[in-house]
Image 1 (cartoon, helix red, strand yellow):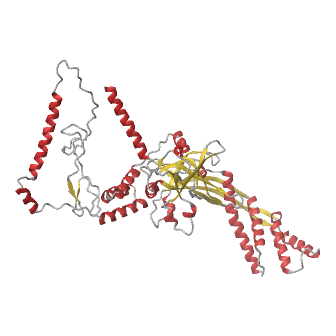
Image 2: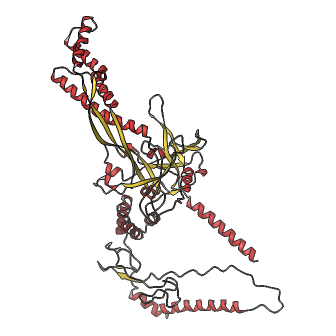
Image 3: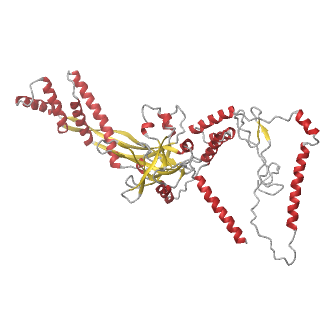
Length: 555
């Protein structure tokens, strides 16, 4: 019998577990999906700095004479007409083409610290700051970086030199053509590149968590990060794990990509540069809120390395890299990684975007012993949003005020807080009015009072309890073959603490629940008081008591 009862309870438990798993993956509306995940989706910036040194150069004295002699020869041979415009054009062309043959380095050098950066998206998966993004967002290719630094520096100085030469020629009455300007700029570029050195390459990572106060300096809000594990950019497993310092940070929930099928709806969230860092936008504001796009799973493709990748038509652009791809339950099932380009035009092909399955990110996290977990910030925020959506604005207000006190500055929290406050003001709690004299009089005339009703209820409970106790004391008759069945007896649960008592706000005097953290009338925080009420039996103990005087439970 015991085995049968245990089997029944085991089956019930497994069924309940299965139901709980299904409930966790239920579809949520798009607005809720966006709201609960915004805080945990962050902008990732990789910054590279280096010392760039280039050598100064000058021209030999015979450069101008040789140019004049060559131009005269060209006129004499009929290669160019004998006009002032043709002569100047020929001299400029010769100067651009043969500059390095007549230049020498003076021995002087100039060093300047330069920097370049790349931006992408990431998402926080643990309360203490572990973050997932793409490898190519944080990958350091030294050769490519040297070229980037050189190109940036050389273009700047070559452009300046060409502009100064153009201004000098204009003062002499000659206007350079576009081709002539480019020729001079390219000549200077070649000279500088041959005498250039790049040293002391440094890489750093920053995370912008979208809690930027409007009007503040965005760059001052970045949190430094360390790189903990990195894969290889596409076609490799394009995943990187970074760590920032922090506690109770907003998190996102990781899902299961193995259950995805073609046609399933998905949502991409991130910071595409076109909608974040554009000069036409307010960058300080744009960096506070990631962009959400939607689409479907188009297919699951095989990569050349033997692993699969998710194809989606959800719109992603430069800057989305490393951001989460959500399923309809708001769980991350992929990492937005790359799109396809048209080989003929170089333009991005619409609807041809790819995401690394979240399974690979889980493998990376497991290899460094990191277990994804939801933070109390996110759990509380979900609870506040649920309370707000159900119309319990006062409960939402209380939770949001607590979040804002411990984690201030999140725009999405501020927005919901304002909406909850507006809802609470529009729907105040109505206190029941005391019974009228007429109602009391009718009750008295009927010969029954509220006290009698209560007494009758208590008497009924006492009778039921006595019947149960007597039934338990009865023993089976001697010799009878019947044995009482053995039932599973659940352990008694601790009684809930009594929260029905009230206190008053120290600021406005309004009545408030004993366990309330903020006043619903004026929003002031409740005065902190030490409570020695036992959470097991409800007994109010003397101040300083560590164990309940009635039941012995630890306070």
